[in-house]
Amino acid sequence: MAASTKAGVTLTGVSKTFGDFTAVHPLDLTIPQGSFFALLGASGCGKTTTLRMIAGLERPTTGRVLLGEQDVTALPPHKRHVNTVFQSYALFPHLDVFDNVGFGLRRRGVRSVKKQVEEVLELVELGHLARRKPNQLSGGQQQRVALARAVVNRPEVLLLDEPLGALDLKLRRQMQLELKHIQTEVGITFVHVTHDQEEAMTMADTIAVMNGGRVEQLGAPAELYENPKTAFVANFLGQSNLIAAEVAWRSGEELLLQVGDAKLTLPASRTHAAAANPGAKVLAGIRPEKIAMVGRADAARVPQGRNMLPGTVVDASFTGVSTQYVVSSPYGQELAVFAQNVERGGFAPGAEVVLHWDPQHTFGLDGRQDIDAGTGEDAL
Image 1 (tube, rainbow, N blue to C red):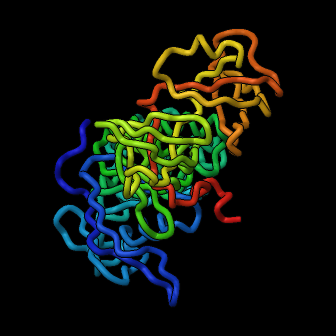
Image 2 (tube, rainbow, N blue to C red):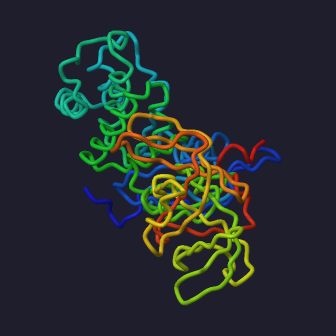
């Protein structure tokens, strides 16, 4: 089901301060009705505070919160047509699955809950476990009960606060796909808070990457990954190689960058530096999986027009689906290269190599930014 062009949630100038600390700076955000929207960021970035203001659990210091066209800024949580699923499932241990899911309906005065509860239990594939108690369920099954209990009330917006954080990796990945399927089936606006980049990219239609109480960049997962606009987004969403360079000259739609003795080509359309004139400092970005690698003796076999950098393999780690290399360049930087596991062999530490990639896969960022932003190294 495609997201509506109507707004499911609108935040206008919303901010939140606690004493002298600003958790969320003034924020304007529109979440389309029926979409799966993720607030992504590290701990302390303001994502959970933003979610709590939508839920009514925190009152904004400034601004307005709208659900659809209704201003709910001053309304308490129980008067907002939203439900929240937390990391702790908070199921009633003395009630079975059926009664846990039907609890909210009965509390609202719905007399016959059987049909609604059965439908939502089938949606989450738990109909056969309707009479089990929570302690008889796995973690993933308990998560689905909590989700069913929230969905059965058909809220306008379902808020998910790190709901998969307590699950192991394999189960978490399974639940990511199930959550997306459920959201598509019911068509409710989902707003999901997470620090897990893979989780956000797997499920969300749109991601807001938050940093320091602000939205660093907003967009579809593929757009954010392929075309990050800041060093923080490039490093936090996946892994990037950022190479300090200087603009040598500009010709039409291309920039020529100087990196030591090497030159790299950068499409002007993928450059987000404030200035891209000769002499400007730029961070040239390239994702590790976009890079190919050959031995130094085979450098002549690299196709013309490719960006190229020499290097020495420092480390090689086989992960099954790929081998992940760390390559030191003569210009003082270490670059990551992910080589897909399609052929036997590879490069051992100490091997002299040439890295090469399609210039169209390069993106350019303002060179005045912290090259380590978003890696965790920037906080050290």
